[in-house]
Image 1 (cartoon, rainbow, N blue to C red):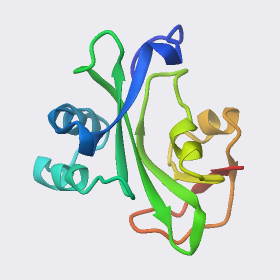
Image 2 (cartoon, rainbow, N blue to C red):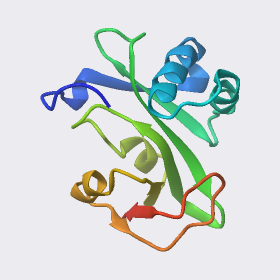
Image 3 (cartoon, rainbow, N blue to C red):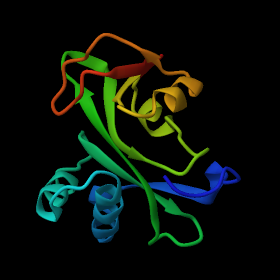
Length: 144
């Protein structure tokens, strides 16, 4: 989503939404611009964010920490202690990072996409067999 390709990772900060409740409204707007859904349903999902997972993460500008420019939701993959499912990814080009998941002991990330396969392939993701998760799609890609 969003800005130019000249953005740098250090220009942004990733904040857990459950620790920064004031960001929920802006995250809701961002996600509903990409994937329209009722505000009530979207807010319920964001309010379920927690330390243990699922965790909703907001990407904010360092210079304006109240400005949400991205989001990702990390959920556990059943029967896989070392894997997470990444969904609802909305980020500016050039700032996607898997650092938060890796810092939590994750060795594999799975995501679902309908229209960004080429984008994720350039980041090292490859198609894989479906992964059992809640709310996922049949088209899955993984990065190892």
